[in-house]
Image: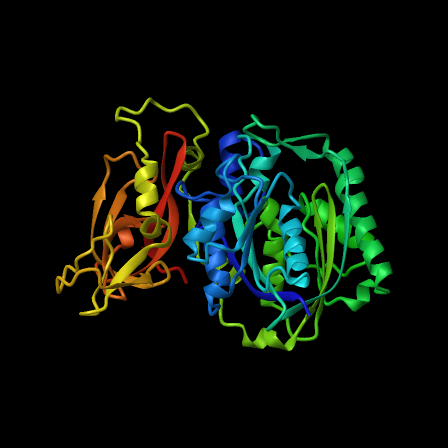
Amino acid sequence: MVGIVSYGAYIPIYRLGREEIGRVWGTGGGKGEKAVANCDEDSLTMGVEAAVDCLQGIDRKSVDGLYFASTTPPYREKQSASIIRAVLDLNPDIITADFTDSLRAGTSALRAAIDAVKARSAEKVLVVTADCRLPAPNSEFEAIFGDGASAFLIGNSEVFLNIEGSYTTSSEFIDVWRRENDPYPRTWEDRFISTHGYLEIVEKATLTMMKKHHLSPKDFTKTIFPAPDARSHSTMARRLGFDYQNQVRDPMFDKIGHTGAAFGLMMLAAAIEESKAGEKILFSNYGDGCDCYIFQVANHIEKLTKRRGIRNNLSSKMHLSNYGKYLRFRNLIEWEPDRRPAEYSSLTTLWRDRKQILALIGHKCKNCGKVQIDFPIQRVCSWCQSKDEFDEVRLSDKKGTLFSFSMDERTRDLDLPCVTAVVDIEEGARLVTVMTDRDPQALQVGMPVEFTFRKLHEGQGICNYFWKCRPVRV
């Protein structure tokens, strides 16, 4: 049976308290906090994080499809899925596709992956969904929107979450939208869009699916239906007849916020972490219609290796010290012109060193066994001087040790100080890179670090990415 083989999730380490938002604008920002992507993160880098989590214990060469879903891809005309494929070091001859322009993009990609596996055009398809939506300052959305990502591997063997039924409906109803040149999402009067949009569409689709499969609320252990806000969420549970305390999955509004196209599938990932074999899960995802699924938890869930998932990402966090830092991360006000030359990008360099830059591929000498990473790649071993005797080795999923570091308070980095780190990788190579997601006061030589794919800068309209290091997250 076709179903979910593996899952992963990612939540940025930074949180912004809603009381800080209220303090700045003089109105109630609400309770709790929301997840905020670092200044070097976007939907693509967060998607990579979730995908890496999902692929733990999976042979990456067995994946023959990758679908990326987001309403905020880094490029409007350039496929993000193909970049993620290269970063994950997957085979180049797999199916790649982007799904966008709807909060239902994640489950649209999920359905496409299921259909591909059923049709035997692919055996394992990785579905990655992430969003980093930009709310207008002092708007209703500012307190609601959060950032995050999830990933699911669809296959027909070693399935731990069987798909027992589904139902889809589309709708032309306009509630939240963003045109080509709009920096922020727009919306209409909340009672109208809630009554005739979310509540009406999700209720009808969910009841239709349950009737189709001769099921009632009592047949489900858990239910998941992402909502625009907490009030709509509780109203939907009541209208569908579910026990809000015992059956309905917490939407995590007070912990993460609404993460756009990734929201529903992040809730599914959180539900999986609490599930046991034999349980039945109802999942309804809203956005320009509704995608509904019935999942059955299989015995194979007990064989899943431990993942960072939602729970561990939630417990690993740092708070933004003030609202001004959030403004700088999101470039939400006009700043003093930069006194330094603009960043420069070279597509020829990016192409020449693409394996090292995107997948962090090092080279192991066949003669002496030493591993090194060079930009550009060298033909002669630095240790034994043998020539053209190398095997490729992926270093991005290896841990490392902080050998040395320095701090710069005068660079153009948005999260000062800029920490330059020398890392000894467990495979033996040494790499000079930048450290992110760190507390400068807590850094120590010899501390364990891990690699994370991040955005370096934008030069000439090109998003430049590379692997940075960070203290190992719990």
